[in-house]
Structure formats: structure tokens, C-alpha cells
Amino acid sequence: MSNDLTLDAARARDAADPLARWRSEFHFPVSPRGGPALYLCGNSLGLQPLRAGSEVAKFMAEWQHLGVLGYHDAGADWLKLHEQLAPTLAALAGASVPEVVAMNSLTLNLHLLMASFYRPTRERHVILIEHGAFPSDRYAVVSQIQWHGLDPATSLVQIAPRAGEQLLRHEDLLAEIERIGPRLALVLMPGIQYLTGQLLDLGVLVKAGHSVGARVGFDLAHAMGNVPLSLHDWGADFAVWCSYKYLNGGPGATAGAFVHEKHFDADLPRLAGWWGNDLTNRFEFGTEFRPYVGAAGWQVSNTPLLGMVPLKSSLELFAAAGFPALCARSRELTAWLERLLDQQMGDRIEILTPRDPAARGAQLSIRLRDTRGNGRALFDAMLARGLICDWREPDVIRLAPAPLYNSYEDCWRAVELVRDILNAATP
Ligand SMILES: *Cc1c(COP(=O)(O)O)cnc(C)c1O
Image (cartoon, rainbow, N blue to C red; front, side, top):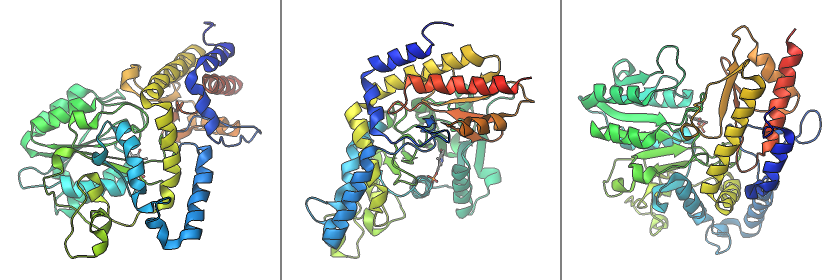
């Protein structure tokens, strides 16, 4: 065995890694076999930061002691909690602070931003998505098209990988954008494709969409907090994300949105509510809606603060660890897991995710090569032995070593466990 793929080598890497210490800032679930579980599921639900519990307790105490005064109390400062999150979110998104906001949930934000950015006309009404789009995104897009009185049969175009391939090719995406041309209203693509883990070249897509006069928006559910982003410099029109995956904000945590600065003065139509009204006169209860300048102007309702407090704890960890350093660690960690998988069971397991580290994040999607194999049984055995990862129909297991809390040793143990299960199952 190549001697940098051993347990000792994994431990040596962890010991030498200055970022390994952030692991101790997180709670790990308990394995059915006792002890902490192996957790490679940050792509689905990030782990709970230790400090989130005490921050939530602190918030509850503020509510207890201050009541409604918590909104304006200098210490609690509830009215501006979203502003405390914005600098780190902006750094992760590659945006300026006013271009981002923590609000609502992902799909809701998608609807709100499509209300502003999908303005179909007789000529220009098509939305381009990928055939493998996450169901919620698909439902949102189809329902927007129908809500405008249009027919998805003519206003929705879906692009799929070529026959026999798993990944989208940029040349095909660009050709499709070119082909739809003057009919194309909106390109809506994922940052990272949830099933395969493919990271798209978002800058290239923005350029292509804009060159035919379309708007370009991104769903960054699997990209935010996972890979470096430059939404501002790319010129993306808008983006949305959830905060419970790599951002560790907790189940259903307050999500986020990006609106490019170039749209701040554009007086875009929007679906408004009082929480989007600028703080300077929100509480005058006037008849005129004067939105915040920036993404915060898309807020609608009084924010559920309990959905933001754990996110704040997690974002503090991102800020303290430094996102570029985390991304560099992530590439190394994932590449190491990849090599180990190839070496230990490359004959039995296929990796769907791009091999190029620049074309993926922390996630590796795998499946059994033998199509008669029972991937679901493998996955169930993994769970039963305390390896938490996730299963996506029809046959994909996703493993995601999150750089804030996963170790090389986690990767080594996960691969050993999978190999043991496969060996035991093979007659
Ligand atoms: C996780 C995920 C969602 C979830 O949407 P919610 O509104 O948070 O329920 C949507 N789209 C994609 C691509 C996702 O990965």
C-alpha cells in the first residue's frame, strides 16, 4: 500500500494541520456502536457548533429579560442580527456586504428573486435549467412559468449530460444558451450539482447568458461555504442558498440571497413586505415602501431570529478559520479520500464526481460499478456501523469531508468500513 494512504499517514496529516483544531468546535452524533459517528454528511446537514447551544440560550435569556425591548437593546440588537451575518456571508459569496442578506428559506428566496428577475415577454420567456435539477428548484421554476400564464412545454428548456455521461459539458451549456438566444430570459444553474458534485464554471455561464441578453441566477445550496465564489466579479444577477448544509446553521436555518449591486438602482419590481423597508423609516408605518438599498430590500417578514443564531455561531468559525485556507484544506482532504477510494476499491466503486479538484467541492458521489450490486444495502450497512453519509436515488452514495470538522482519519476510517462491508458481502 502506498505509504501515504495509511492510518498512520492520516494521523500524521491531521497532527500537522493547523486547521484540524476546528473539529473540536463541533458536536458529533453518536454511532449506533457507541462513540462518535463518522460524519461525512455536511453536504446535507452540517454539524452543530458547540457554541450554538449557548448562543441560543443567550438569545432565549434576552427574550426572557427584555421582551420586545430586545429589538432595540444595544446588547441584543435583534433588529440588526442579519447585518452581523452579512460580512462573513459576503466573504463566502465573493460579494460586497450590501449584496447579500440572510433571510427566509432557499426556495422562497428563489421565488422572490425570480419575481424580480424573471420578467417574461412574448419574445423572451425561456428559463434554462439542468435536467437533473433539484426537485424544489424545478417546481419553483415550473410554477413561476405557469404563474405568468406561460406553458413549461415552450418556456422551460432543460439541458442534460450527453448520453452515457454523468457530467454537464460547458461547451453544451454554451451552445444551448446560444441556440435559445433571444428567447432566453433566465439561466438558472446550480453552483454544485447536488447529485454528482460537479462544480460549474459560473463566470463562464454568466458571460454566456448575458451575451444573449438573458439574466443569470444560481442556486448555491451545495456551493456556499464549500467552494470559493466570486459572484460580484462574475456579474451574476442573483443567487440563493440554504444555510443548513456546509454553513452548519441548523435544520431549516435562515437561508440567504445575493443581488448584484448593478441592480440596486434599477427599481426592479419585487414582492415586498415591511421587513424590506429601510430601517430609517420602517417603524413610521408610512404608506410608502422604501426598500433597503441592496439585497436586504428583498426581505419580507419579521425574521425568525432563532433560525439565525446558530448560523451566526457557525459563521464565526468560518471567519476565524479563514475561508481560503478552508478551501485549500478541502481540496487536499477530498483528493486524499479519492485516492484512498481508488486504491482500496477502485475496481468495485465508481466515482461520479469530476476528477479535477477545480471542478468540485468537498463531495464525492460514488456508486457500485457492478449494476447488479445492491448500493442501498451497502448504504444501510454503512449507517448501521456509524458512518453517516447520504443516499440519493437511484444508486448514489454521497461522501463529503467538510473541511471545518472532518479529518484525514475520518476519511481513512470511512473507506476501511466500506471495504469491510463489501468484502463481507462478496461470496
Ligand atoms: C438543499 C437544496 C434545496 C433545499 O431547498 P429548501 O428551500 O431549503 O428546502 C433546494 N435546492 C437545492 C439545489 C438544494 O441542494
